[in-house]
Length: 214
Image (cartoon, rainbow, N blue to C red; front, side, top):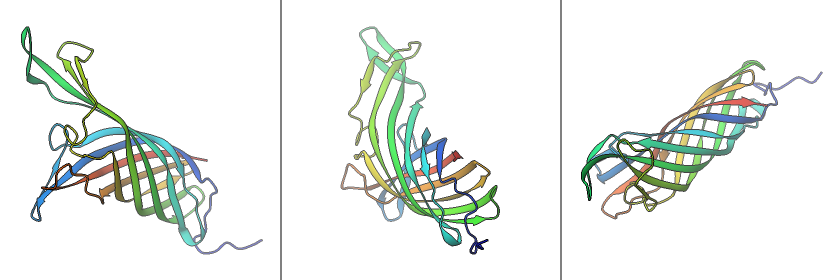
């Protein structure tokens, strides 16, 4: 029987279906010592869900790759605004952001292969994402259907002027049998600002996913 090398893979389950949580916020820098987060409604994160396919091949000595293709959906509702005006007078309303994103990561991974049913891993690399579509809807309080839907939102309502982004990506996790748990973060590498007066980078501070590997 051929002896396996040091920290050799103990599973051939390289593919996985993924579901989890995603987030998004922007870092604005006007001067070297003036940097702060901005969002769509305030400085808070946008929250979304993520689904996709993971490809996680494992090589000798614990090294491997982590990549795939993921769909993210952001549906974030604002607090109530009181400054709406129409022919009947003033009214209260709220805004709702809807955004559909495709994300493709490419990570180098190091995995501690304790057994076939349990491993711990760490990874780092790059990630690219692209907004397929997005809009901001405005709905009067007490109504279900919006009275206005705005699609030209990038560089105005959305801080970023670009639909694409590239990030430094890193994280880790563990696998227990066919279940794999990942926690990661992405830091924007490119300036997506709509103005030359400041730099803007999109960050994805936290992603948490659960994969079923096969």
